[in-house]
Structures are given as structure tokens and as C-alpha cells.
Image (cartoon, rainbow, N blue to C red; front, side, top):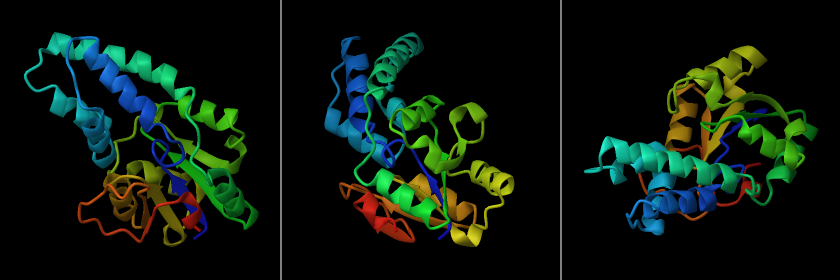
Length: 204
């Protein structure tokens, strides 16, 4: 592989603790108790949006907006303290040192770039797609295809890396490989991935 396209949340950075705590706090502030373990499982397997949807059943639209607003305030603060997973800097450095390239493809906004800069990782990446680029969400391949066109990526030598099935599916939908990073062996759906790893160091 020459070009490695990385998801951010739960792949490059261990942001789930802050996301889960923010989710739980937002509901509890509005008198609703939720199970943090269940929240984590849903976020990891699916998405934050789907997790909200499952907990929003029988909740008024007005209260939904209030909970979401509270979540974003909490999560914005929590994300500032997020740390990269062990091995991220070393693996990304090895990729660039051997002539490869790293790219970021995330549903998060450009706050992800601030974290990369804070931790000295930004220079290891060639290109970025964030939520502010307004591409369809993964597993739609449009954002991946945009990176391929913009940076002349050979899809036969490229891989999409993420912690959820939708990341792998996005890679396959773009006709490239898909690697699943599953550090806690939580993904039990039948997913055909080209590699499944529990540690970032196993990517290369």
C-alpha cells in the first residue's frame, strides 16, 4: 500500500471516552439516565447520529434539540483533551518515510486538524476531508473519490482505515481496500475487511 486514508474518531484519536461522557451528561442534565456502556457500543458499531436516534424515541423535538446542543458543548470541551492512539505517530511516520502518504477523512469538523497540529502530526498528512467539505457521509465513496482525483491516488495501492463497518464499506465502494481497527473486538457484524487489527502498529 502507498496511500493510507484514515478515519479520525476511534482510529487516529481515542475520542470515544469524551464523546460517551458528553452524551451521558447531556441526557442526565435533562433528567434522562442512559447506560454509558450501551452508548459506547452503539457509537462504535454505528454512528453518533444513529445513537441519538435510538435514544430519541418518544422524546419531543424540542427536548431533542436541547440535548443535542448540550452534547455539542460538552463534546467540544472534551475533544480538546483527546489523545492519539498508541502507535499513530510511528506508523504515519513510517508510511511517509517509505514514500507513502497519509490522508484524513472524517465526519468531524476542522477541530480534528487542530488536534493533529497540537500533537505534531499535521505535517505527516497530505490531504484532508472534514465535515465542513459537505460530502455525503461514509459509506458513500464520494469523499474518497474526491481525494483520489485531487491527489492522483491509485486506488489499487490505497486503503481506507477506520473503526467501524461503514469505513471499510466506504473503501470498498471506492474500489480500494478497507482495514478495520477494532481494539476491543466489538464489531461482530459480518464484515469483509482486507485486514482487521487490534493495534495501530499492525496496520503496516
